[in-house]
Length: 203
Image (cartoon, rainbow, N blue to C red; front, side):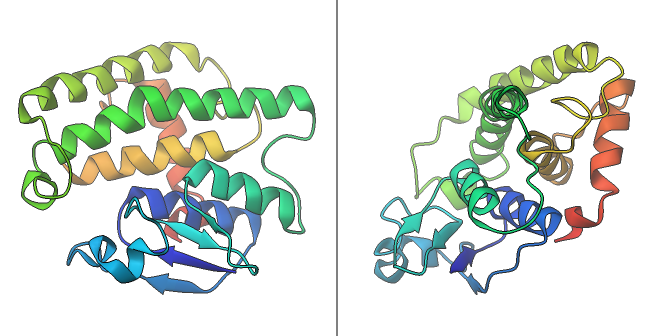
């Protein structure tokens, strides 16, 4: 196997997941800043031009980060971080989807349509007027989440999982692109700091 890797939060999610699980695969770097992901060589790997992508030993390509992480978790030796019962797995998948739809996507598009516009305006349809609303939607959901965490250590309970990796990675990205975490959200801030303190977050 090998992972087509680049800068950005999506590849970071997979690298963090692999580090947490103790999985190592070769990385092939793709220069997205220079637009290499929009050139024919990479488009034969992933026609959508997105990163990361995992190439399996038989040449099969997996391209969605949650799918890549779940495949690695299920196919590689070691203790799963996707839950050890059907109920735990369902909770982790539920929180992963919630984070992706409600925070990660609006946060990322808020960036692409504003601070990231010079890079993305010739690569995808951008809607600059939507950026403030998208950023506000992400912040609204984070405020809601702060009230939902209670005394749970992590999103789906006591186990650190893909849900935590996904959300914490995108919040760390937000810190770098003008969408910092509201530190008045004390419970959420404590959760975020726990996630960022893990060795895997440096992958």
